Length: 126
Image (tube, rainbow, N blue to C red; front, side, top):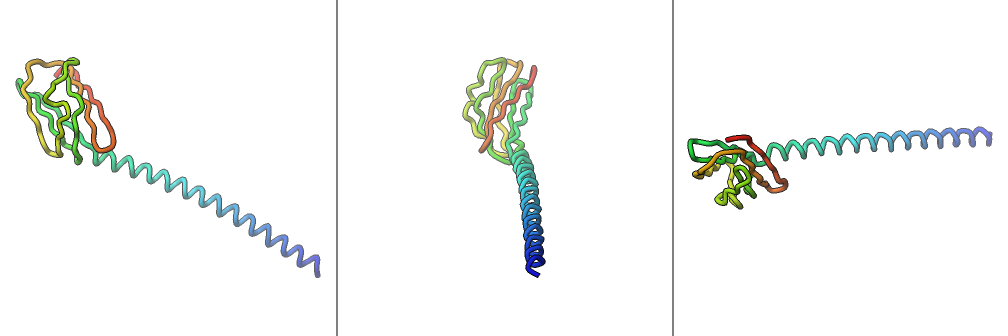
């Protein structure tokens, strides 16, 4: 009878250990899935809520419009590596458009930042 009790206790301990290991594996797998989903959601929110600058040329005027959902601050706007000083440090709110008269046209570079990230776009031969 004592041997049977010891055998039953040993089987119970093995079952408990296996259950514990399976539980830890499932928790780790779910934690990895949750982390992956949170990362995707964060990237999606960042993409949706970032500033988007739309740049257009109307005759001799350059128009810059923020079509995004957050404020954009222009760090640099240059045509053929010549900075347009009117735009440096300019804050453009969502749906706001700024128009400036320009003398020349060429390859445009714009650097701007939102609340958390910086962006750089190059447009060829405007």
